[in-house]
Image (cartoon, rainbow, N blue to C red; front, side):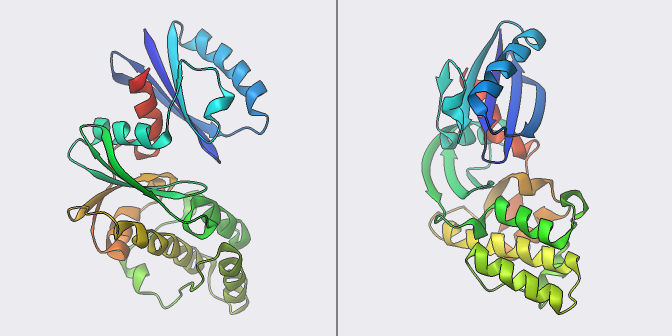
Length: 245
C-alpha cells in the first residue's frame, strides 16, 4: 500500500509518495485554476503510476480533491517537520499567501501563529517583485554581506512596497540588490511571529524560499536566530499528509 500526500497551495501543489513510511517520490507543479476537473484527472494518473494508493490532502484547495482525508495544513506541517528533522520544534513556513509559525512535539502541533492578511510577508510578494525586476527566481543568490546593504523597503503593505521597488529602479539601483531587499522585507515581517513563540534559539525554515541559494545564512542574520533548513523543506506538509494516509 502506498500513501500519497498532496499539499494544494495557492501557487504550487506538492506531492509526496510514501511506501512503508519511506519517501519514494517528491514532485511539484503549478496549482491549476479549474481544480476539481484537474485533480479528478490527476488522481487517475496517480493510480496508474502508483497503484493501490491512499491519498490525504491539505492546503487551500484540499476540498477540491477526493481523498480519504482532508487535513489542516498546520497539522501536516508539524508531522512533516518531525519526520524530516525531529529535533526541530519550531518551523517558520513562508507560503505563497501567508507566513505561519508552528511549534510541534513528537509531530503534534502545540501552538501556531499566522501573519496578518498582507501579501508583503508572503511568497506572492516576492514573485511579483521579481516579475517587476525581470529577475528569475533561480538566479537569486544571497549572502550575509548583502544584509548590510542600505537598500531597504520600509512599507509593510505589498502595494506600497511595489511602488518603492519602482522608485528604486528609477534611481538606477540594480535589480539584484532590490530583490535582496524584498526577501529581507519578507523575513522582517516574520519577526512579529517569532516574538510570540519561544523557539529555543533555533527555527526550521520551510516553504519555497528555502530553495534560494544562501537563504539559511541570510535568514539567520536577519532574524537573529539560528536557522536550519532540513532536507525537502519545501514538502513538509505533503510529507505530513502522506504519513497520515
